[in-house]
Image (cartoon, rainbow, N blue to C red):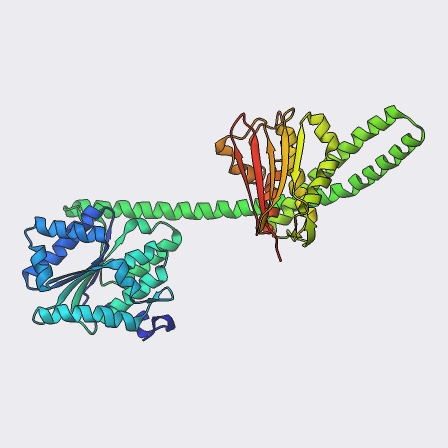
Length: 460
């Protein structure tokens, strides 16, 4: 019977004799007490026990049994008590991430059969937490399948089975479905100590009422959050639609404006009017800045919609950096930074040159902005399997708590009062680098500047 192919063990209900229990717990100490009592009750009537648990839990069970006056070592010697490691036992019958029915039946069946025969045919008391380990491994499918295989095994071997799950493993909506499925494959369900240790019937009823109230409250909260999430998704979609429309609408008049400014600059040069040339140059810079902001807004929409496509081809990163540096000569002069460029020649790979130009431009612009008046260094190095771009400034630096979020959309590490921008440059850089299969990171301390490092695989 192969578990991976959907055996009858996957579809069976709990054993007809109803001897499959599940215990939920919060504290290990409570679990130790419950399992020790479960085993001790069997020992008093001559029933042997098989325990499949972690090392820490096995030690806890043994300590509790000894405290109850039970001779654990003697029981281990004569076979009345069998202790198995849960993780090691699992490994012997798991195939492709699922419990294999044939291997499980042979392995666990043989253990139960030996205990059954050694005890003169008495029923075996079994405790297992392999299912809990599977759930902690985020493998709920395997945990539920193993529970059903235990039920199937119960039709061939006489045993009473107690399973245990830490309640903390059920926290999400998906976990809730798993929780109900776990309960469904057991004949008896035992709640955690928060309820089990309440002795008075009236207090139990009050606790049930309180749990029902909390359940209803959570259901209401979940529905509210679903509505809010839907509204937020609608708002985000409307925002992206607005940005797309605004970006495209700005492009047309901006292009016309840049053409007019170019024509006017040509006339001013023909008339040799330095004053007019200076004013037009400032206007061109502002138009160029507006164009950059417009493209950034359009990139937000493209990336958000998963439409960031790379035009990959042969690209020399060293040459690309040199070109960006040359175009930034005026910005370097205005920033009063001493720019040092260290590049290996050449550093070629299969990259989108235009997109990497964005990355270099954004990193260099940031370095000149936040390190104004201080040295800035741009570096390109080649190694066996990747190219490295580094941009270092010695400016104001970035606080540790801001170093992760500065790569997020519309995030900034400084106030917009003193430094302009939309907070999109580093986010776009990250998207471009990761689309190439690379990584971007920052190292910084306040007052000591920042070093941005980009690592890019060469591609194929």
